[in-house]
Amino acid sequence: MERTSRRRFVAAAGVALTGLSGCIGGLTAEGVEGESEGGEGGAEENEGRAEQSTTASGERVDGVPLRASALPVEYDFAALREEVLSGGPPKDGIPSIDEPKFRDAGEADSELRPEDVVFGLVRNGEVKAYPQKILVQHEITNDVVGGEPVAVTYCPLTGTAMGFQRGETTFGVSGKLVNNNLVMYDRATDSRWPQVLGTAISGEFEGRSLREFRLVWTTWKRWQAAHPETRVLSTETGYVRNYGQDPYGSYVPNPSGYYVRDSTLFPPLRRDDRLPNKRVVLGARLPGEESRLAFEKPALRAAKLLSASVGDAASLAVYDPRLDTGYVYRNPEDRSFDYADGQAVSSDGRSYDPADLPLDRTYAFDAMWFAWSGFYPSTEVVQ
Amino acid sequence: MATETHSRGPVGRTVSRTGFAVRAALGRRDGFAVFAGATALYLVVYLWLGDLLAFDGSGEVGILVAENPLERFFRPANSALSFEPVALVEFGVGTYLFSLNTLLGLGIALLVGVNLAVTYLAWRQPTACGIASSSGLLAGVPALLSGAACCGPLVLVIFGIQASSAALTVFQWLIPLAVVLLVGSLLWVGRTVDPALV
Image: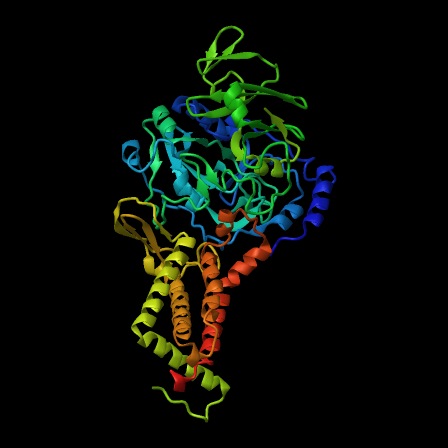
C-alpha cells in the first residue's frame, strides 16, 4: 500500500502550504478558458476558441500536449504520492473506452431519460454528449472530437467531469485514488495524473499539466434542447456492463446513495466544514497564489449572479438556466451586470448569453465540495 | 452403508466420515432440497451483492456478448478475485452479468449448500451426528460475507462505512477465507458423524 500516516502527511502539507516546499511559488494559474478549451456556447464561438487553443503556448512531449505553465497544486508532490491508495481495481480493471461509438439524439432518446445526467461537449464545431451512466463504469473515454484527440474523464467519487487534450497517447484508469479522485495514467510514459489537478504527481511528467477543457454537467433533456444535432456516446462500448445500474447510488430522479451521504468512501485529504462534503460547487483556479474560488452551485442557481474578490482578482459567476450550469469570468474592472430572462445585462443595457459575457472566461467545473477543498485548501467559498 | 477401516489416521477418518455425511445428507430427498435451495439462494445473494445481478425490471429480453470474450474471461476487474463480465443477459425482471465470478460464487455456494445439508442431517438425526444442530449454519455466515468481496469496497457505500487500505486488504482475503472456513466447518461437522448410527 502506498498510504502512510495522516499525521505525517498533514505535517508535509503544512510545510507545503507555508510555501517552503517550492511547489506553489513557481507555479501560476493561467486558467484562461479560451486558451485551453473549446467551451460550450455554440459552434461558432467554439471554433474561435479552438483557434486560440492551437496558438496558445505549450509543447508536446512524447506526443502529449502540455500547458506552458503548470496548474496550481497546493501540496508537495511527495506528500500527494503518500496519499495515493488503491481504490480496489487493478490497473485498467476499470476499462477506458478506446473505440467509442456514437449515435444521434433520436436513437439515444430511447435509452436516456430526460433527467439523466450527461456531460456535454462542443469543440471545434462538433457536439457530443457522454452519459454519466456509461462513464460511471469506465471513467475515461479516449475520443476524437472536432479532429482533435481528447480524453473525456469522469470520477464518480468526486463528482468531476473534465476534458483533456491527449495528443498521440491515450489515458487509462490506474486503479489508484488520491483524495477519492481518479488517478489517470498516460499510456506513453505511465505518469500518474490525478484528474482534478490535471497535473502529474509522478513519472516522467511530474509537475507538468495537461491542457484541459470544459465539459458541461447537465441533463439529457437540457442538452438535447440546446443541441439537437448532438451525437451521444453509445452503450456499445465493446464491454458488457449493466449501464442501467449505478453502483454508487443515483442522480435521478433524486440524488441518493454515495452522491448525497456525507461520508466519503476513503478519507479525504482534509476536512473543511464550510459546506457539506457532497455539496456541488463550481470550482475555478484563478491566477496568483491562493486564488481558488468555489461558487456554491445552489447559491448561484438562486442568485443568478455571484461576485467575488480574492487577492487582486475580481470574478463573476453567471448562471445559465438553459443548461443549469454556470460560467466564471475574470472581472478586473468590476463591471456591473444585472440578470433578466436568463441573460446578463450590462450597465449600458446590452444583454449577453451567460456563456458569452464580454469578459475573460475562466475554466471552471463542477465538483463535490470535499474534493475541491481537499485539493485546494486555500479556496474561498462564494455563496 | 459406508464402512470405516481402523487403519486410517485421524485425517483419513475425518475425510471418510465427512464424505459419508455428505452422501447421507444428499441421498435424502429433504437433505438434497436443503442443499439445492441453499446453494441457489446463496449464489443469488452473492451475485446481487457483487452488482452482477440486478432486479431492475427493464422488461428487455436478450443476450449481449463482449468482444473477445475468451480473452477477457480471466481479465481482472474491480477487485481481487473479480473478473471482467463477458456476457449480459436481460431476462425481463432483471439483468445478469456472466463472468468467472459466477463460477467462483457457485463454488462457494456449493460449499454452503453442503454445509447446510449436513447441518440439516444433524438436526434431523442428532443422535447419529452427536453435534449441535446450528454448527453448519455458523459456517455459512463468513461465506455470505465473502460475496461482498467481488465488488471491492463498493459494498461499504451501502452501509456508509469509510474504507481504508486495511479494509481493502481484508476484502482481498474474504473469498479464500470463506473457502477455508467452509471446508474446515464441513470437516469438523463430518468428523463427528458416526456412520454406524445413521
